[in-house]
Length: 171
Image (cartoon, rainbow, N blue to C red; front, side, top):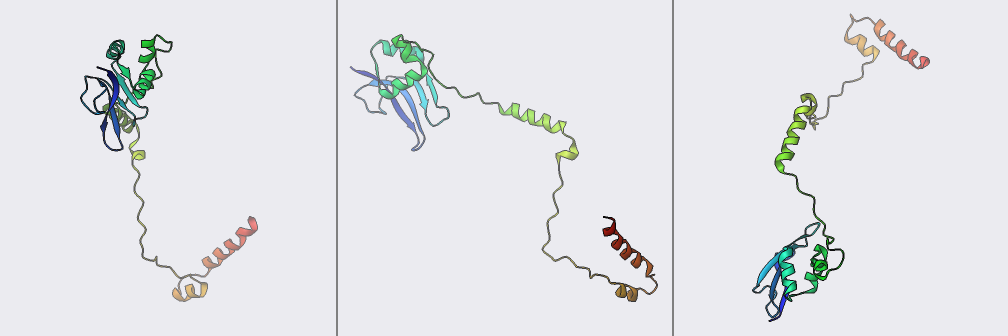
């Protein structure tokens, strides 16, 4: 009986996941397997590859032939080089950075929030702009001001106009 190491496809239509299995060469791609050796998830970045190296070495030793895809995966993990006795047995497998626990992130956010002053922590919302037109006050001229209030002296108005006239001269 010819034994092959091949990929068994799982997952959704556009999200494949594979199991590295040992199966009879005559079985279907997703047919019955003798043993499951690892997983391969190509959609993650970097791809997730987990292989039971001890079992892979056993099956290669008893004559199981890897398919081209499985051979490429075994070269990345370094199992193929170890079996053949070639240099580079450590492989070129990229490992994703470990994810930080949500509780650690939460505790850090709580400490940051506690260290900030409360005035800076919250800013008041801006007042919404109303659609109503603002009441425009008519410009007050000297004759209108004098007729509006006869008791008001005309001197302050004259002083304001003198101050306006002298301001550009100083500048």
